[in-house]
Structures are given as structure tokens and as C-alpha cells.
Image (cartoon, rainbow, N blue to C red; front, side):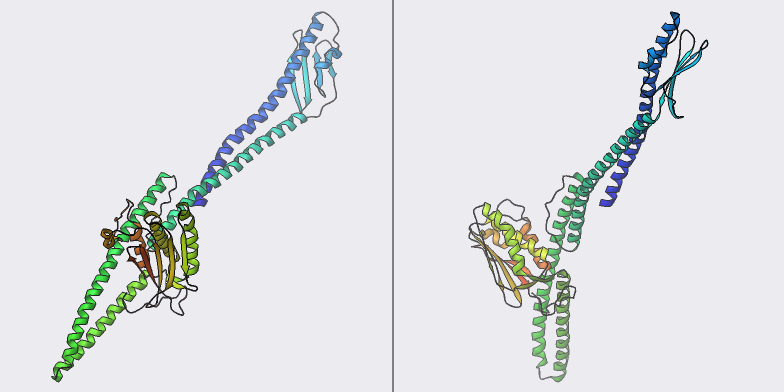
Length: 426
């Protein structure tokens, strides 16, 4: 896109430069020749007038009297019917500029100069015009490059935003470009991200609810079948054992389906060093907190690895820190530690008044906010964490403590290799 924009602008500049430069150069050449001829014609007129006075007074023509009117290096030729041709000045080469005017008392005055000086001035003028054209093209190239970058950068950003959206990154991007059309596209992408996040969240909630209900029913069914399998009637026990085996297979199928769903969501996840990632995130947020008279404390254990997408992790922790900045108070603490069941726990807490009781059950609902904000941040943060196979919870309301549970990568997990997912549901 950038190349096309650049080529289009350069083509317009070149066409304009040629359309103006060629006529300008031709006109400049004609002007130089016209000025030279006008000067010769004026001198010839002056000489003819002087000689006419001499002839009218009956005096013999003396070319020395008009020598000052002859340009340096020029040749004057006077043609008189009675006296023939008389000349003054050096012999000139073949390429000359000549002007001839009549004498009132009969005869003609011819004044010629070497054309080389005029050709030199024409060359200089043509070179100047060419230089102007080249400078115009150079300036146009610079302007075209800057314009192409200014237009291509937002387009690349929009393309990257659409790619992230297609990959399941539903975070909002408030970047705008001061270009009405691209700003409309950005607004549409944000609206699409919000709608997709809601759709995916509803789908995940449905899968979670269905899996929970199915597991409850399967557990109850297995208990009944185990009781029947212990019955004294051998035929009943055999049938119950076969049914129990089928129920166990169904449970295995359910585990595989849930594992595949989690693996599809976490396809972009990779082993990340939380110490490095969280330190970089904390460095970004220290200054905004310091400007509000608050501080950020970092508590990390060394060599903590988690399975996550770096961009989603950065956005999620950024949302939690922004929430603590806007709605919390006091010192903000960002900590990470090993958790239970092969998880890593990341916590963001502050020493403010906490979350009101009426908001606790709905804190992650989209559009719910206690301070007039959009109410989208925490919902999107939960969706991003869930996309990587983790979960985000409000651990305590007072003080407000948000906890991110991330899976720990297993030995042998490397970038580009299919992740092995846990068979047990979260």
C-alpha cells in the first residue's frame, strides 16, 4: 500500500514537473534569443538614424561615428546604392545573430554578433530550469514519502488490529489517526471486538455450564451403575457393568472435547518469563501512578514460567493496573507466585476502599462500572485470560485483589509445537 501511494504521488509530481518544465524551458530559450535580437535591432535603429542624418546633410558617411553603437565583437555592414557595401568590425563565424533595418535615405544597416554568447546564456537558463524541475521532483519525492508513511502507518496499524481481532485478541485500541475514514474503521473494529468478546464469553459460559451439568449427571449415573453392578443378579450386574463402561467412555469423550476447546483458545500461548514480562509492565505504569502521588510495588519470584500470549498478558495486567489507578487508592502491588494444580498466580491489589458489595457479583459483567467508566476493561481482560486457558477472579473485595491464574508450561513445550492440554476441566 505504501509503495502504491508513493508511486502515485511521484507520478503526479513528474507529470506536473514535465508539463510545466518543458514549456518553461522552451519559453526561457525564446526569451534569451528575443532579448538579444531586440538589443541588436535597437542598436541598428540608432545607427540607421545617425547615418540617415549624415546622408540628408550631404556629408560622407563615417562609420567611426557609430562605432560606439556596435556591440563588442559585433560586425556592422552598411549597404548604400551609391557607395556599395561598407563594413566595420571583425569577421564572424557562420553561427550569428543578425538584425537588419532600412535607412530612410536609401540603403540598409545590418548588425550581426557571434551567437555563441547567446547559446551559452540559453544553456545556462535551460540548466537553471532543469535544476528547478529536479528540485521540484526531489521536494515532491520527500513530500510523497512523508505522505505515504503518514497514510501507510495507520493502514498497517488497522491491518494489525484486524489480525489480532481475528486471532482472538479482543482488547480495545483507542488509537486514532486524524483521518475520518480510518477513524471510522477503527471505531468499527472496536465495536466488533466488543461484540465478539461478548459472543465468545457467552459461548464459554455455555460450555462451562453444559460441562458442569453433564459431569454432574454422569457422576450420578456412574454411582447408580456401580450400585447395580454389585447386585447379586449376574445378568443385571453384567448389564450394569457394560453401561458403566459406556458412561466412563462418555466421560472420556467429554474430557477430550473440553481439552480441545481449551487448546483451540490457547493456540497462540507460549512459555513466557513472568519476571521479565511483569517487570516491563510495571515500568510502564510507575510514572502514571507516581503522577497521582502513588507507588507501585513489585513482588516476583525468580524463574516463573507461565503459558500465555505476551500481548494478552500485557493488556490484561494493564487493565488491572489501570483499574487500580482509576478506582483504587494507596500503594498498588503486583505480585506473582506459584499456585496449586500446575498454575501460576498473578495478583494486583491496592489499599483503597475496595469493591462495593453490590458490584462484587457483577464486577466482570460488560457495561458494569461503579465510577462512570465504560465497564468494558475487566470483561475484556477476563476474555483475554480465558483465551489463553487461564482465568481471572476477584479474590477479595476489600482490599480489591484481582487474581490471574495461568497454566504452567510442561517440560518439552516449545514454540511451534502443539500444546498438551490437561484432561481435567478447570
